[in-house]
Image 1 (cartoon, rainbow, N blue to C red):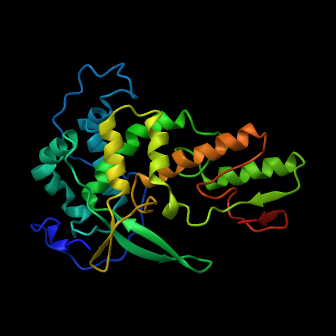
Image 2 (cartoon, rainbow, N blue to C red):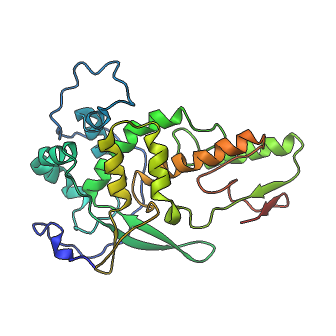
Image 3 (tube, one colour):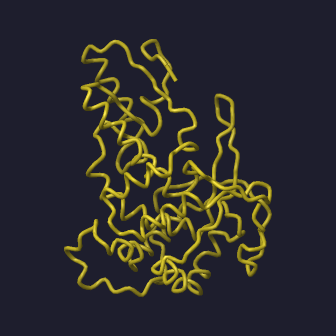
Length: 288
């Protein structure tokens, strides 16, 4: 157990609120002051895979874009009680300090707040809600890594990817059926997000990301822990659903599966941890 009083005593804890709907698209232009003083000059032609990846993540434009996305998505507070509406003021006061801690590999993400969401078919989906500050940092990481990994991802993967949707995945499956394939097997990886192996994921990331500070920061987020009714629990595995970074990390891990299925010459369509979209019908058989 970890003493919860260690978490930022200067912030007033708010009562647990209900999880708001996460919106992805920005509505209108959101004006925001810079929270990073790094110069953007001379950055053309920089190798995204190089040792300055963290500087790219913390650049003024990228951090401002990350803030705007978190602000637009709204959502509930983390364990520190800081809300999205209070985020800009907090970043104005502490943004430079935050950036310096990140650059020096001294930043420690806070634990996520456990939220349980009932599933339509029964059971409980466990979400981990990061603090709004950690959501900004995770979003900034994701924005820089997505273009790197989009080049590697399979064309048969549709979940949590730019300009891709469940509808497109369904059309892909329909195309297989129209081509004469009469059986579609639906494979659902049970509790996938909760059981991701950290060491294996870090190994896969290290193949492309050469900035050790970024690797270290991602591992810190994976192992930041979860707060359940005021009690801190370690997270030795998994990537809690609820943060901006987890969907990308899940796809990076499952791309290994896509590569293997492609090598075997199999027709497949993956949407996140589902082999095909969840759609009941005569030609769909679930085997998970």
